[in-house]
Length: 443
Image 1 (spheres, rainbow, N blue to C red):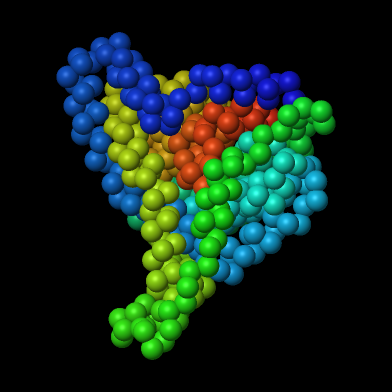
Image 2 (image 1 turned 90 degrees about the horizontal axis):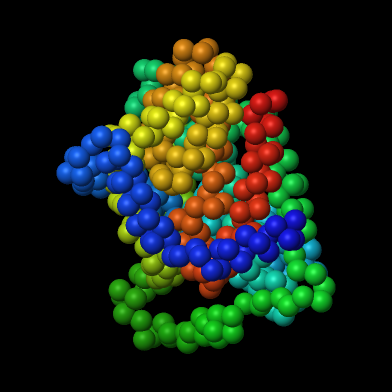
């Protein structure tokens, strides 16, 4: 395991560029394939340009999930809890296991919260255990735990198809999260991954005599500067506007309104949707923040971390449009559907989703591409619709281990580059692929 991870790490460190270069390469690759399929360059360019604007709504939703998750993770009580957690492990093995599991737990709750909370824990592990652990592996352990996000509370596809009025309702109906996220088979696979992935990462740690890379010194200096206590402003010096900004009353009332609405929503039989997830994080963050000024500061930090989503999602939407309009996405999915049976359709949906995710790294966006094909196949074969949908969700999360897009906010906090962790997560791709494939075929 250590040898394989070292090979992948050397390849990643030498040849893997920034995530935006990855977007450029995919754009060029799909454009050329579209021309080879018989479309003129102008037609493919028109597909690209028209698709650029297709998922602005989902881009805003994805941004808000990340930003509100960031703000919640940086509220004093949550932030202190995460940092205190980093002091529990006593050796490298415990650090790797703890970092992976906390990311799994937080990502299951929400991918936006998980990416930020997991990054904070990994960074704090690097500070507390400086010089004693291989920091890139710890950060990779954090990202590896992200694999369960689409089978959790914030999963885009399960929450989307549980929302009345979703775009495939006529073909598949509304499917409750009790049949997807909380189905026994899904919970079993999450449990198995919670054992297998941390152990795999432990086996990848450097030998006792090998050099370990610590958190960069520049990041330690940045941490010391950020933790400097700001001088208190005396109440006599406060203006009426400042007093409102420092008031606990304002965010408390807004947070309470959000919670009351959520209670009313669920009491009335409302479902968990992506918008409900966003509101729940807004409400929780406002309830736990000390004042408006503090929440604005945390929210601003989340907005800065979300630049990758804002900048790259339109380009991925354009790639997605070329894939759809030229028929490439359908070709990939149909190739697997054509050899599937009622029992194996979820497995082939998982594999095809993993491939499509490399070009369209967005759960909701990918479902827009692949969902109609998989739903039609499930109807024709008589397959379990909920299992097919969750299989596509697993496929989307699976190849995130080698798709650099979702590492952006985590690495921004951790202070590393994509090439530092991708060698380790590539091994997790292989290990988790075996677990998930067997689960979808046997459970």
